[in-house]
Amino acid sequence: MKSLDTAIFGKMISTTALYSDIGGRLYKGKAPAGAEYPYIVFQIVSDVPEKTFSEDFEDILIQFSLFSSASSSSEVENMFSHLKELYDECALTITAVSHDVAATLVWMKRENATLMVEENTTPSGTQEIWHYAVDYSIMIQTT
Image (cartoon, rainbow, N blue to C red; front, side, top):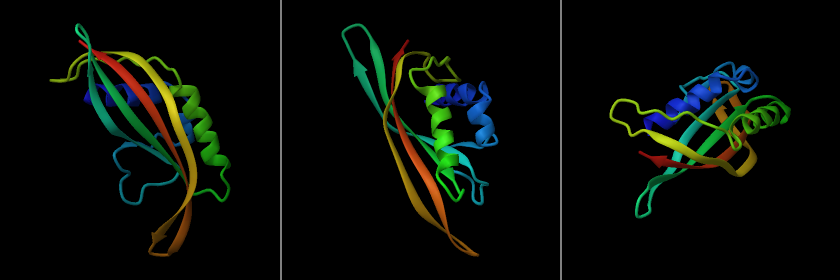
């Protein structure tokens, strides 16, 4: 849903803490090859329609993946703290974009967060990367 993507980007730019943590490097789907750390990638994991007799909803699971190449976890944990401040139970302005449907945010709740270390192979060798995967459940009412 393009309008939700726009709202997520818009919310990120409206803050200074998380945006400055990542130097504005927020990507949808995947980071470009050779992207500088730290950065965040977000993607929709699932989007399920929910209908009542009179209302239409979208039940969306979105994941933010926070990446840091710092030697300790402090940088990625700081990013996680700022992500929570920004998106936990937040308000999003979701407006119709092109052929997209206008929607009203019902809730945005953090469902899960996992901190891990991954190995990234580069031409100069292997590098350990901190990765915080954070899932949010989003319920929107479509109009």
